[in-house]
Length: 252
Image 1: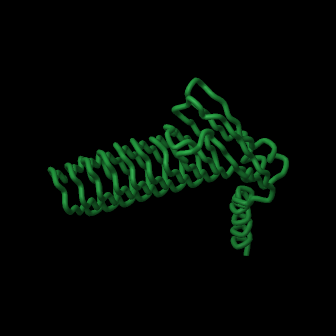
Image 2: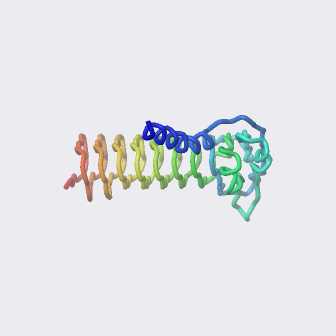
Image 3: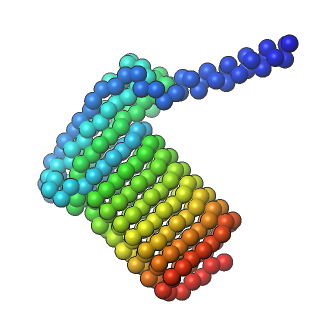
């Protein structure tokens, strides 16, 4: 009886913090920002927690952002802000969430939708939440966790990701992805592709350059239709399959 009671108390204590950190959104407020993009060549998005959807428009002349701030407590809702600034030809769009907001609010984030001129080089620094990006000139992403989906990038793509699925399609290249965990899908790339993956499957197809897997911890690798070489430098576990490789193949 005493052991059962102790186990029940421990279960409640373990569950209590989880309840406080739940992803509830009891209080919301709209946030918006706009910055003229004339003469700009680069956009830096400091996204913090929350989802991010960014779309490049050929006819756009400004960066226009609309978001929904979300907190489980009204007391911290006003602390979640969206700001802009300019440094020369670089535009900065920043989500501001106080470092202690999680402790005070249980959950705090800003879900963001952004439209930008299609000719900008975009740099995204994101801590958590899904990222969807389409139609920009070139792209750099540094992400802590959450899925990443990228389509229609005219030039190079660089992604540094902690965890979460990565899906990249239709990019001019080159492509450089370093991922901690999660599956990687890459398709329709105009240049070379280089990948480093801790765990998760890798699926690459329709590459007009070469494909190099620098290292793969675990998970299958499948590569199809490559105009250049296919090289795997280091592979931990998981099968490697390939088909229709025009150049050299080197698989350990």
